[in-house]
Length: 279
Image (tube, rainbow, N blue to C red; front, top):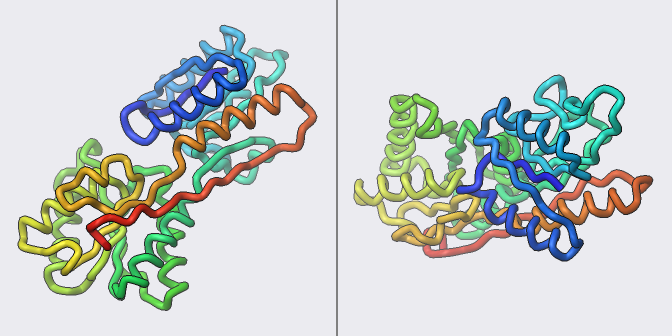
């Protein structure tokens, strides 16, 4: 089986680990490709794997799949060649990709449980900082807005945040300063910060301004890669990354063993790990 993911240094190491463990149990070999969020590199690696005769493909596309966007592995098969079964990992295809199988974390659910936790802790002015380059940003925002509606709170503080690599340092600084001022002024008393790296940056900026966490503001990170290592250990939503890798291998292995099997789209639930920053 081929496994193509965007990165091997954040989020996906646990997915890879789960896939390797499941592959060992099924007696299959995993060939790994890292696209580095480069669509051309991604397609080149898929073409190479197809030319080498892989039996199945697990792939996390760099770009959204479906509705005329992105590509599907079948698009790269030689003319007349049989399609190779594939599973989308942590990506939800558009509705026009009817036959695509997938294994995903329910990121909307993850945001909802974070909001519910903060509301139950007595916080009533909850904000969201959302990485605007994340493929999961729409689902996290959906869950955040839905979670606030469920507890009767407004959703009027959502800040899209550029990543450090997007070349928009001025905009990033403006967003971080706007958030800090909102906390200092008392406009918000809690926040969900997507992702871990930005949550740690936010924590450091707040403490430099004399803001106490969690006394003055409670924080919950999203991803739980390094959240627990912050100087105030951060509560975090933890997608079931290892379980996603396991389920993806199992799904495609069963597809290969039983080609006529019904198509599956598997959704796994994140968990909230409560630590000092919101406890």
